[in-house]
Length: 242
Ligand SMILES: Cc1cc2nc3c(=O)[nH]c(=O)nc-3n(C[C@H](O)[C@H](O)[C@H](O)COP(=O)(O)O)c2cc1C
Image (cartoon, rainbow, N blue to C red; front, side, top):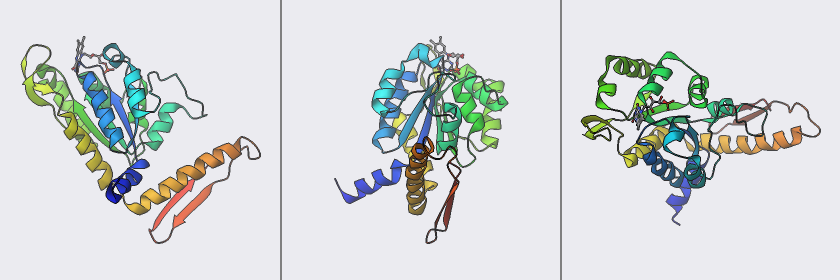
């Protein structure tokens, strides 16, 4: 393995993508997307809406990302923190691909009735948002959808696609999910633009320390103390409140 490949894996290791998949006929392409993002070295946590699970099962995502897949707001993992809040805190990028018209409407109006929309609403302010819509052309061009897109762009979300072509609903026109390789590239560009080496070192140390504290916290410390990291050369600081 070349030094630059190793360097990019180490650099990417601590960056986390929450990949939201909503109920679209293009959902099978999200499996490839999850695979490409994982191979690029990103940590990928997939969140499937209930409707997405009509089109695709968690198994392929779980196997390819080597991570649990969130399928239900109420299916909590082992920690004390609700899974959707943990993911909202940890995400460096919320990528929704494919994003349905319904999901855009929910995001724009701040609805939070499933794991994905709860994560979007609770998302930490440093996380980027990238949305790749896929839908019937009339749904995409409908003034309601276009207004939702404007609202989300106004809040800083970036859109990629949709593109024109043959749609699975039988029509030709705009609405196809953008090319998966280019979605993966755009996601990587957004993450790399937001990072530097010092950030990575501090975050990695922080995560290791945080999990050590969690372990210690089960024994002697019922409330692990706040810990403060500072890497003077980087000018970077990080707080952990156990
Ligand atoms: C066969 C089929 C394909 C669909 N494809 C899409 C699609 O590509 N885009 C879309 O916005 N809605 C599509 N829908 C409708 C959504 O699944 C529906 O609006 C659903 O409520 C979306 O839920 P979610 O946004 O929570 O995942 C499709 C429905 C069916 C039955």
